[in-house]
Image: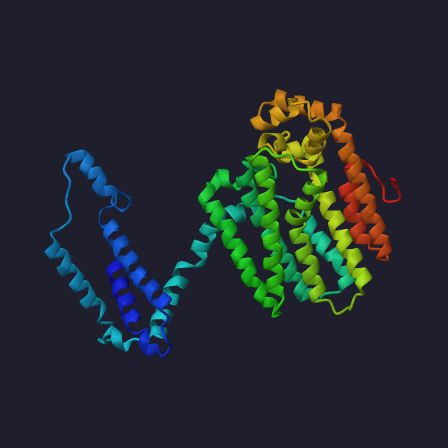
Length: 420
């Protein structure tokens, strides 16, 4: 098969000039190099143990090595293979077969490989995660925000699907990068299907979702999706770098990271809703919505940091104080380390990335002692009240208020309560 493909490659390369376009010297160098790669890979694959497991076991059993056939035989086999390749099923030579026909044949082969049964196998980690019960609050927020935008239902369906797929794909990667073993009260996908297939399922989902953006038939839609995906990965990378290099950021730096990492999908949804809105909003209204998006994003993540350390429900769905085992600089930990720079106890526990319950309980006790838990709660209360205030300035939104109520319930802050 490799020899057949190489013969096909050589034929197409020889026809390159006849296509009419002037061949750039760099293109010529690239194609020549590609040919050398194919030859080298073919020769390597003739003997590599990776593709000859049976022969390797035979060598272990008999202590005898079967060498490659003599060069003359290899040349004879190459000649036969090329000759066979040049005659197609109609008796025509490959010179009679157009590049378009070859492309169609390749596409047919690809389609057969990409049948539903194989797709199910490829996407097993993703489908497994989707089968686990989640709160689905992002769908609720998208529909609540559309109260102001009035985007058509067919666009809402696509936006909702895009955000949902990208969010779940990001969870697959997050659990690998964070070393998480539990997600939504069950084993994390990569612990069930292993890391390579899980990474591929996440990347496949992201690429397929970007492709789905073309269904909007709008020149800016795909740009919006890609732009915010880049922002998301930028924020995630910064979060990982702080953790792995044990560099404690400031609160402002952490909040900026949250806006990039956690707010990426939220802002993507808002920009897509705005793109297809039949309502021409003024600059003031757009700014208020953007401010609300940022406040909600910060509330989401800082609340999550808080719950990770004190919520029994979170412990059941993930594990006890998982952020400590990850070694993550979450909001309460950043506050504690910055106000007690001379006390190394918390930092030393964080460096260990421990699963020891006693050590993690000691860390939580220190966070209470330093006032970091209560400080974080206070920040979340202020963010919730800011969300209520911005919603009122936007002339109200019952569904969005209910979503904020749900987030703020753990702090026991009703909508009418204001904290100065």
